[in-house]
Amino acid sequence: MKIKPCALCGGDAKFVYYAIPEKDNLEGWELTEFGTEPMMLLKRIECRDCGATPLYLYMSMDDCIKAWNDEFDGGRRILQRWSEENCSMEETV
Image (cartoon, rainbow, N blue to C red; front, side, top):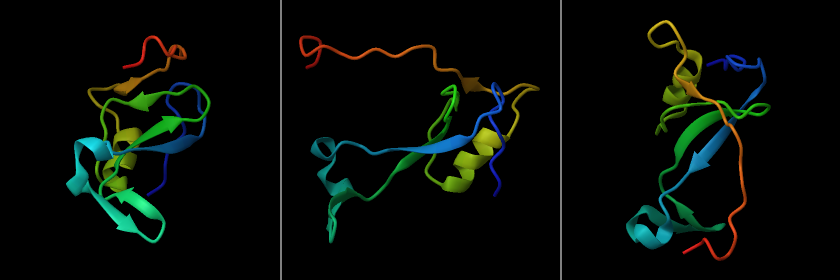
């Protein structure tokens, strides 16, 4: 499936993967030849240039690409990255 350019800036897309933390779900992780790895990854596509991304995470690559490419209600339901900020050690738990 071909991935379209970003609807906001025309930039290229990148895949971003998420896993449930191992400490919260030991059954969802397995020991492989490369170390401990998640058995399931949630996926999303993000623009490499402006950081725009669809609203939801998906299990399959096809669903992830479809969410990026599809239009909903006449317009794209995507989020645009506004800013980012590093956390200080005092703010982390």
